[in-house]
Amino acid sequence: MSEFDKSVYMVVQNIPCGFVMNYAMVAELAGYPTKARQVGRALHHNPDPANIPCHRVVMKDGSLTPAFVFGGENEQRKRLESEGVTFKGDKVDMAEHLVQINRCFR
Image (cartoon, rainbow, N blue to C red; front, side, top):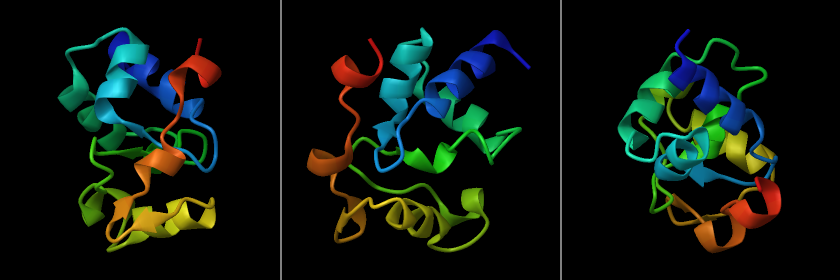
């Protein structure tokens, strides 16, 4: 496993239940601010889904990732809703559930 992947997984492990981050935020906190797309690749190959909650990473606008990543249609949404995350239409309510980096990660 690369140092990049380890850094991404460490950040994602620390996203609190009921909150989300976007790919760019994860990349920045992992120390690779220009590598948001690679975050998606790393999460697609998550070696420990029980402890690395990659379902808590969403698109910048609150959109969810393609269904195949989590094992079926609407699986990411189901997981997020089970943690109390609310939606506006088909997108996460980012005003309510986006992690505040200052409080959680610094």
